[in-house]
Image 1: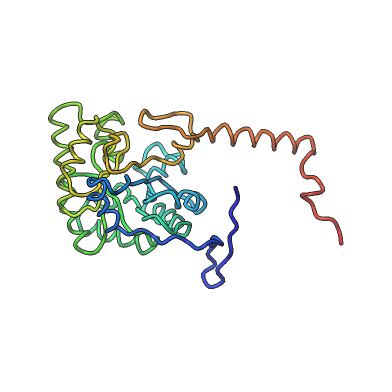
Image 2: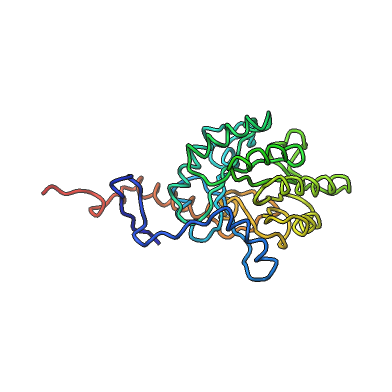
Length: 291
């Protein structure tokens, strides 16, 4: 179904004709934890978005939109998230902010932009937020990153944590397998989540861990947990939108495909190509007659 947009002449922004929704806030997301525990709040919904149009389509249904560094693979065809740059993240985050009105937009801090020191992290986060208008940043790591989370939070930069399987550390981890199968590793992941939550993170993503760890963390921390390959008992869930839509043949274990967009696009491209080659397209309806 198409949507009609008008252009705001003052900003050149494409606006839906209907009144936009009021955007959620970081405190509202953080406060959802208590409401979920009391049975009066719904789990948080988060999906990735990298472009204006995808943001427009996802925004009414999501509490948070994540401009993930997964764009390295999804958009740019890179082998991992490691080569992603601040400039890439800022450009895509700005597009998602322009395309959304309701969700809290969170932007990933790419590898190498925050690990060196809290000051480096502040400079990178400030750049991302100034360039994009995003409401928060997300960074990977636990105990080691807790001082950085505190440094940013104390200076007005909302931080979402990320523990468990941390894709930026894929070279150190040796792959993308589920984490926490040993007791020592499980204890470390729980400790990491506690550390970033206590340092001031307003929410924590738990990725690719054995389910009991996700449940334990969700019970242990006072901020919402958002699972991806974790547990339905987390306070929310996130998926890469392109995985959820079925745009890739490979389906990670933790993904449920809600469509087969790859087949849909391929079939329509095939039909278009056939009509062009047979000169069935364009017709009089798609061309301009002289006046």
